[in-house]
Image (tube, rainbow, N blue to C red):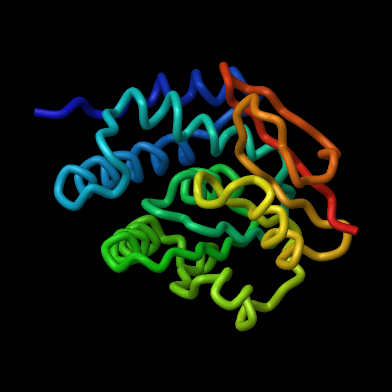
Length: 204
């Protein structure tokens, strides 16, 4: 029998990044986590992930990005996989709007289930196109934030993301301590765990 998510742990991980969660957000994050773990055990959404790792690693990524998302922002997430970190991010930034791009059928089925069961229909749109093949020709550009995690090398993501974000918008990359070869100097950088950082680039 698998371990269940601990709402207090979710609250503590968020608080460590300066994010104070309302009770409703904690409840929805817990519900999403339970859905993820159930589906992951059946169809392998993201490898072997237990309840503790889901919160301390994957929810943590979402909480780190949250500081860069403002009410009313339009956010595109490329390579959304099993909804990490885009769904937890949407749950803590309920006044932003998200487009999640994921081409893999079983993951799309999961994402659509999450959107339906958590009542995110007005906030999160699931798309199945591959934005890089060709380079997002069908996507309406002008997003305030373009983000992607573990889908492309940093330099490749910068090339894709800067075509999706508006002028003055942000391209957010999840990185480690490696040098970001082929990218401009980030406008902001957030180190939030050992060998974990966000690189925030501003589009001209």
